[in-house]
Image (cartoon, rainbow, N blue to C red; front, side, top):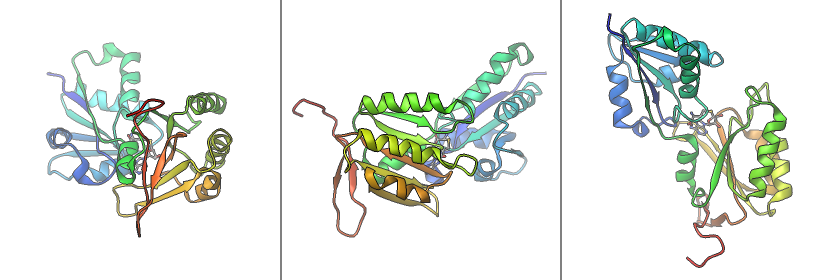
Length: 256
Ligand code: SAH
């Protein structure tokens, strides 16, 4: 039997218009769609496709399942929100694959990029990622909290703009507050912090607050929120009746 394929597909932040044509074509070509239920539901329906929705926690198991289906000759799409390589399924797939490569000798593996949350958030508010920046997942499910704190301190000292993914959940209620308190000790009090929830979806909500008010504002954050902490050079441009623009100049210490 000819082996099939696994394509790990980024669906973008939520608005279907942000799905790339290439990712859309890969979805349409799939015989099977595998992923966390909420993402599987976002893939446009096509007759004849089989959908395999699963819980969000069992990523490596889900990856093995997708590879097994492909070994049977199926054309499998594994879906992730945003970009599949950013805190998502693509790395889980390679982890499963590397641990047992002989089991899927002929399966073709591909990754289709998507617009990751921090890029959608950045575009919504202006250009906060115009200078150097980094992304950190605040979830301590997959790494110890002290590793996260060490990394946060390092990037705060380096004066990078910081995109915090997975900032908070019911099981992790205090970590975001700790991270913002730490940031507030290292950055000027008026440094902008963006709290952007469900960007590109019907329930989108974006707030911009100075860092000394960020801990209080973070009470509204949830699992669909991305928190972006400005660098010392990140600036606001006020606008009547709208959120200000936020941008970080490209130049540091030289005249543009
Ligand atoms: N692969 C995804 C990230 C998965 S981690 C991507 O590239 O975007 C899940 C986290 O992403 C959430 O906790 C939140 O911090 C962020 N996120 C995903 N979609 C978002 C959206 N539409 N608006 C704001 N944040 C989002």
